[in-house]
Image (cartoon, rainbow, N blue to C red; front, top):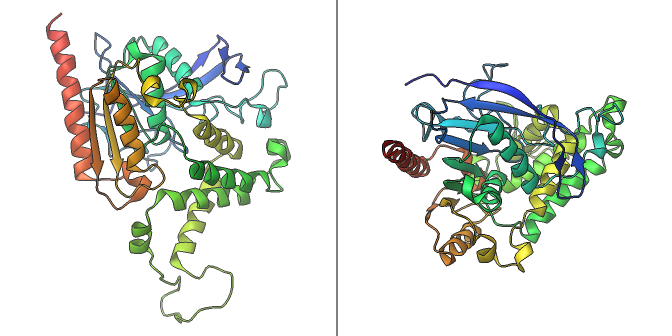
Length: 385
């Protein structure tokens, strides 16, 4: 097993980036991590697109903190399903995020203060445009694969239609062609938790030296409930009471933490509020809401995906009620309507939406086999030239 060959860099772009909203970023930075080596033909590159609260740090220990392991480390690395001995893997932090790329915490060149609430709303399609410019900078004309789970899967789909000639394989995991009304509602509740926090200050809380922690905590708690399945929560917590060893198992008849699941949610919310930016949460959940490639085609997803040229791998999980398997099957049907090549797997797993981040032999076995096939195609193409 070879080294991960992790390289982190911040890449600056001077050319203005027009956004779907009509706004524009005059210049911007993208923080990028790469793993493995780009081959001489530059055709073994895999772009990993992150979901809501993840970043460029996909695999291995962080250069800044050895305890900070990449968010998809069980999927990407030497000898793993996306094998960095074979592929040149790219993780990029999207615009609007809070992990180094240009976002609300960055300095607005016009005001010389943090953008805050003035950072423009961005969309999945805007992210793909920025990623395409990054690919140009790295000398990559066509990705061997663009891959993502959840919101990352939306970006992979957008790549297949915005730049069909630049994607050989599109890997869409635990995703959806658009959010349901229920999903938009969950996002709205989470956003309102932030917007109503007295420390939010209209999005310009940086200059007050405060963080809307209460809003962030509640937003994360709401989100986290949707990432787990009912069965998974029942198995992990049941109705267990949160008690110190030897303490009474009687109810306390208070509104303090009473059940184990309450303690878990508060812990997740507290942790999230220490590292994530509230404005970023607003931006990224709105990007989720807006994604709907069929909207310009009178709601016809088959027409929306007609010009895709990539081969597809689509994976869903049986207990994922946030992005349910039937939504993945909509994507598969639209691809088959166009006679595109698609492999579909529906994994019976108990972990809800979070299953795409966890270890599952069947899930990882499918991903491994698919990427082995991609590498065989790369080798065949190299051998024929």
